[in-house]
Length: 94
Image (cartoon, rainbow, N blue to C red; front, top):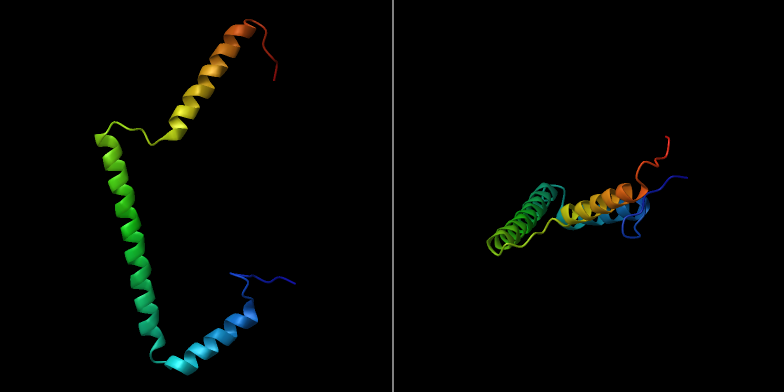
């Protein structure tokens, strides 16, 4: 049996919640509520993007590097080069 659970709510519970929402607000108000929720989610997303942008700009002004993967890749390549120098002409055949 395939069922999806979101926050421990199953399919029957979702239908009951939807039925209660329709009964309380009416079918004509649901599109307005959905639009309001969509606008709210969009505003939160825009605010999050603005915060990320401000953090990145502040880091650039203060000469901070936020790209951790670049540093890790650099260190891994350094270790690989040292290992290649250590092994010399001995190489594994692939």
